[in-house]
Length: 129
Length: 129
DNA sequence: CTTGACCTTCCCCTGCACTGGAACGTCCAG
DNA sequence: CTGGACGTTCCAGTGCAGGGGAAGGTCAAG
Image 1: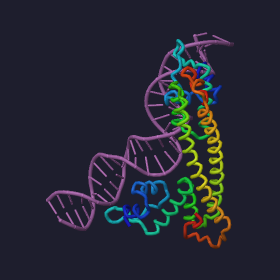
Image 2: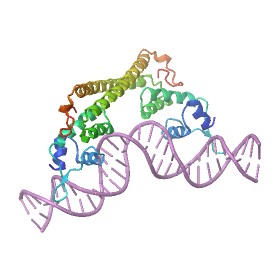
Image 3: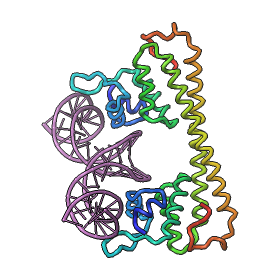
Image 4: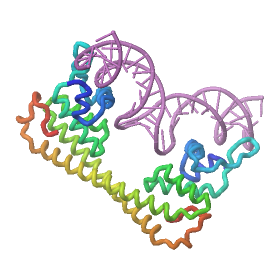
């Protein structure tokens, strides 16, 4: 399987595949006689895992950790669980922060909406911020 | 007010203040005879606004957008209201996306938590992700 | 034989928000 | 008058996740 086919099949680009190899997410594949990368079919499974991890918001470094554990012959379930747990904490924090911001922005907007334009002259720049 | 004092008072660094000036978040301050930046006291208010925005996760570009409208001084209420309204829409979208992602991640974590390790074959990539 | 699609390596660029460091100027206390 | 703490500019790097494009090799079709 050549790099273009794999890119097509996995929904990425050849650039990304070479980058993943460089980043240690993909093992260096076999090379054909002319030097072309020759991927094993199960690379697609690995790339699906990477894609799912990215979708879950994991960094490439975290995904590589999991893959390294698996490649060492150990089932990475516990590690995956811990990663997802930590990711949940991050997400909760992000959501809380955004909701707090939303409240702030909503109040500011309400202040701007109900303002009397005479209070809002050009010399005193908008005080609702 | 020299840059070190302002950095101290605002809880940032001199590097950051020069960067903010470069980025258009702070207007170029007066200079003393020796070339030192000489900040007006109300710069602190501006930096507080920047800090609140940053703490809540706004980008500098978004903060600058708000400050630019404010600095335009041309009865900015309507523009500010529109901007805040649009920002609210973005925030709602971001929050909804993150909550959807949170549900997905929570579900994945639950799968990993209740898994029987004997089901976790080291030869396959963790199927709980 | 040439065209075009593919592949290779190589290095630099992007956006974000800074951060580090060099090389140099200024100011105040001891 | 010297040391240290400040200030100045300019250049470069960080981490993330790739993208752009050059310069060249390879291969099948027409």
